[in-house]
Amino acid sequence: MAQNGTIENGLSQGDIVPFPQPVKVPEVTHTQIFINNEWHNSINGKKFQTVNPATGVKICEVEEADEADVDKAVEAARAAGQRGSPWRSLDVSSRGRLLHKLADLLERDRVLLATLEAMDAGKPFLHAFFIDLDGSIKTLRYYAGWADKIHGKSLPVDETFVCFTKHEPVGVCGAIIPVSMKEGLFPPTVSCFTSFR
Image (cartoon, rainbow, N blue to C red; front, side, top):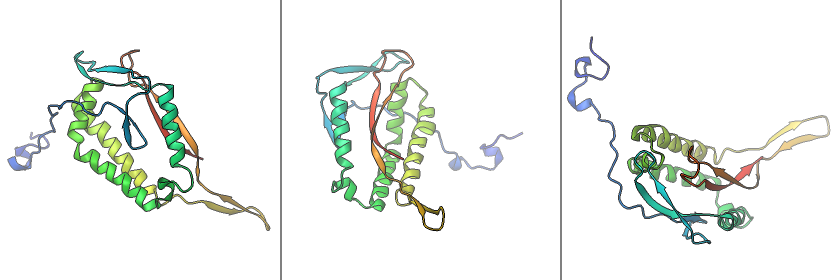
């Protein structure tokens, strides 16, 4: 019995698409901390080595953030949320377009990013390509579509009152994201973002 996707099943040789393959990774050049759309060295000057846990081979050294770097990132995120800032002044459709552009860039460099993710996490390349990168791209596209669709609601509660709900940012949140099951292999990643009620 013919298997799905075989020539015996009606596909021509030209219809068979090979799986993507990892690429030879050039030297990793962006090893600094990204804050406020700029690359920075860590304030304490420390770096840590990131190693492929599957092979033990050093990938690169990256800047090691500490409390002062997190404070700097939180300050930048808070400033971006202030009235009159370039981000707050940007209309919601343009914010959605920026998220779509980021998704486009992830798609453009998907093979390279999946290769780096596989090396950094010691996981299979195809898992990084089809699950991690695909999930990231779809998440960005999902939220890009919502950028101009966040609306408040009004509900009549009795004859003289109306209850109004307005979705707005409540402030900056920091998240420490562990990236290793083996303690000490990779320091945690810190992300700052704006939380909504």
